Structure formats: structure tokens, C-alpha cells
Length: 412
Image 1 (cartoon, rainbow, N blue to C red):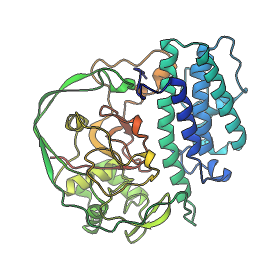
Image 2 (image 1 turned 120 degrees about the vertical axis):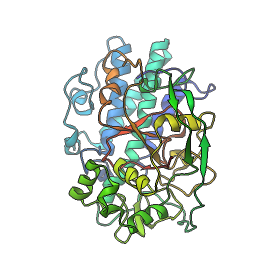
Image 3 (image 1 turned 120 degrees about the horizontal axis):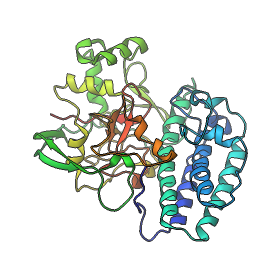
Image 4 (image 1 turned 60 degrees about the vertical axis):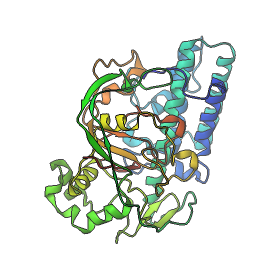
């Protein structure tokens, strides 16, 4: 990962940003019981308690141990329990078994967080160079990624409970029909994409480079719940000609008949507020890449490439339904063109840009080694912190994964 300072407001000190981001993570656990924070419902989901610990370990490993002379680890064994996939750091607990870790307790993890917070603040107060500041900013951005994962993971945990418990509250559902979908034409040619200039970016957003685009059109909003319901009613999940081979195999092997949290009858869905009626105009979410691709084919369109998406949003500001709204659920569009509510699957494989080089050392394992077999998503979601997103941001998941707030926008 590469940190290019700074992403946060110029009037905010780095220490204040560090504290604010750290406090925001703990604030997300409001309304959860200790029992909620331990459960792991599938290998892709991490327990809330693990997110709280791992983001703390990140600062201990990559800030304190790297920049604080004579630093002594908070507790032996935490580097094994809370490392995720940094092989250069050392061995780690199996990802699929994170839900087996009942000790340390949630209370002990919160104490661990506080101790590391104080140590990082003290390190900053003794003076910081550009390399240390860059690493702390990297840790804040990393933590904001885990804030989003914490939200999506705890939703999956609660959805497995037959009681379908509510975690947060939401406004009454909006039953208005979606506005008619319209298309905006974008001129192609040789364009530049990728991060350039000031502000933070991850290494996978660079280097900036040129690509050639044909003229194209994009829909003015993401596909809605009611539009996706039409795909289902028309036999979308029963028509193999609409699906990529691997996608059709998933439909058959896993019995997919609707988006992840939709209920039988396709009239309601599980949300962070429990079971609620579907909002017809809200963007459909929790789709795999395969489902998004099949819908686009059914609609006589396609998914945009990530270069088309980025070119189309150049000059616009990321304003929309992000995590700071506290909704944690897609909302019917309100003048938002590209940002928030749902990540949008693109038709682009997650690959390195021309000239890409991962950073040296263990932090270089964050992005580069995953550039195989995954697809790119753009735009952020209702679980993404607003300040964390930008036009060049490249999210990526495997094409079968559904538990993220992922939807689609049509292109042609």
C-alpha cells in the first residue's frame, strides 16, 4: 500500500484523525451484545471482536514495533491470533477458525485497543517524520476498510439467527416506484485513469496511465429492487443462457433464487433493522458478480469497465448515502449519480495497472498478491466511510461473493 498524505481535512491533526477513526470503530458496536461479537458464520466473515483486535494489531505491528525504539509487545500470542495474511510477519491463526477464539474476551480486546491508542499518541507527541505519519495514515485507511467489513459481517451473523434480530433502526420503507432509467452518453478516446497528485491512495490505484475507450453510455442510477424482481419473475435464475458457466454452476449448487437477504416471495429482505418490506426504488444489493452479469445480459446491456466508470465520474464529488448517515442500508436515489448505497460491479478483472510495483516489506502484501481471480467494484456503499472513497478507489471481490453491499449499473 502507498500512503500519499493527506486524505483528511487540513485543519485536523494526524493524532486527532487517528483517535477519531479508532473511536468510530468502537462506536459501530453500539447495540451489539458481547455474544454477537464472537460469532463467525462463514469463512468470509470475521467476528466483530476480531476486527477490533486486528485493526489494533496493525498499529502495534506496523507503527509501534517499527518506529518505537525498544517497544515491548502488549501480549504474547496476539501477533498469531490477529495477523490476517501478512506472511512476512509470521504464522497466523486460520481465517475460517476466527470464531473459535473466545479468549481474549471483548473487554480485554477493548483494553488492548486503549493501550495501543495511548502508545501511538505518545509516539506522535515525541515528534514524527514523514514515514511515520504516512504509516499511521495507512493504518487509519486500513481501519476504515474494516469498519465497512464489520458492518457487513455482523449483518450476515444476525441474518443467520431464526429470530432475525434488529441491530439498528431505519426510517419507514419508501414504497414509491423507481424513476424511469435513462442513459448518459460519454465520449471515448484516449483517457487517463489511476491516482495522481496529492491525497492518500492505495498502491493498486497507481500508476496513472492511459487507456483507450470507445464511446459508451451509462445508466443514470443503479438497478433497483423492482427491476431485479422483474428478472426473477421472468425466470432469470432458471435460464442458463443468461449466465456465465461458473455462475450457472453456483446457481445450481447453492440454490440461488434471489439476492442474498431477500425472503421467500421476494417482497421483503433482512436488514440491519430486521425484516422489512423491499423498497422498490432502492438499489438492489448483495449480488454476486455472476448475478449482476446475468441481469445485465437479460436487460440487453452489460456491466461497465472500471475505466469507463472512472472516466464517467471524473470531476464529480463523492456525495451520497455512506456509512456516516448511520443507515447501513441502500436508499432510493435522491439525485445521486454514482456514489454510495451499493458498490457497483464492473466487467473488469482485478489486475495490476501497467508499471505497478507493490511496496517493499510486509505491507506490500495488502493488495498485489490478490490480483488474480477477482473482479473490480467501484463507488462505495452505505457501509463505506465517506472520506474513505474517491474516483480511483478499486474494491475487489471474488465473483461468487454476495455478502457485501454490491449491486450494478448498466452500460452499453
